[in-house]
Amino acid sequence: MAEALPALMLPVTSWLRLGPHRRWLDMQGQRLLDFSKPSRVPHGFSALGDDGRLQPDAVADSTLTARMTHVYAVAMGRGLPGCAPLAAHGVASLRGALEDHDHGGWYLTPTVAGAPPENSRKQAYLHAFIALAASSARVAGIAGAHELLDSALTIWERHFWSEAEGVFRESFAADWSDEEDYRGANANMHSVEACMAVADVTGNAVWRHRALRVAERFIHNHARDGGYCLPEHYNRNWEVLRAYHQDKPTDALRPYGMTPGHFVEWAHLLLKLEAALLRTEGHAPPWLAEDAVELFHSGMNNGWQRDGAPGLLYTIDWARRPVVHNRPHWCQAEALTAAAALLKRTGHARYEHWYRTIWDYIDTYMIDRRQGGWIQELDEHNYPSSAVYAGKADLYHAWQATISPLLPLAPSFATAVTLLDN
Image (cartoon, rainbow, N blue to C red; front, side, top):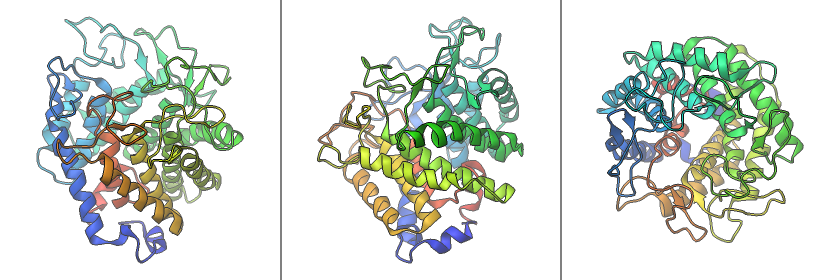
């Protein structure tokens, strides 16, 4: 690991120092990679069922395709067999039927006989993952990745980035008209991750500073003012939409209320951004680490074991009471990733405790040793559920949780992974 100071700060007994734990992480990551390989379909990747098989009507999903491309490109950099063809398939798919070759940008699903899909809106959430995928594929040297990244950044900058606001706009019609009257924390959070990766790959520091502007608005302003509980939904005048999706509390991307899993996910990203700025420029705003600590504790205090059973629940209301008690796998993955990051950054024993506690929870309840992969969602009693997420679509969150503890906080995954075994 090329992260000397944090490595020295780790307690001698930390799991992050132990060879058997590091090998266990590696093994779990490789199992996840193998489980998701059958998700390949003609125009990209599609969701798998609980049994790890494609559904009979499986259709490529652009967000999954971008995430799979990113993951398999990074895994390819580690020399893992079978990953290169999958990453190459992802790049080809993103340059093929998933792309709008008339107006630019990407659809959520493939074109049909050359015509746009039924839902043809261009989403910031998807385009952030395409930028991330393209940057990782470029590091891996995949054919077409350079051109994909150039196209993705042109679209991202021209249509989604709002220089005046310092955030990414949310969505447009296929021809880039009809901008949505909405500003979302979720899409911007993943844009921070993608911006850091793009900055590392292109050498253009402007993307890193855009990540900082996004984080400052959403976290150092809105979250801090709310006691480090972050509203997710705003209109274009930056008024909080408190009733947004009150009738859809289990929405997978824009649920009602607040999401403790995002509090801890932002905490991890703030520490990565701080490390990236220190690594490249020698200085970073002190609030990045301060806010990361507060966000992590807010997320765990408001979301962990709120109803008696272990696990980080999905959403809370404005009085910080549980709304959706179910435990999505990604919330647990991001919580332990944040705990590992804080442990590296501070050396405090409380983060070692959380890191071990969350892995014990995942190992006990979520790792599916019968059908493979991770169970994507548990109910309030920790039994499998599909109220929010059906099947086993996601590799991205779980796999990154297995590799994040092995890597330095900066640079980003695709660039840092080359340091893992050196």
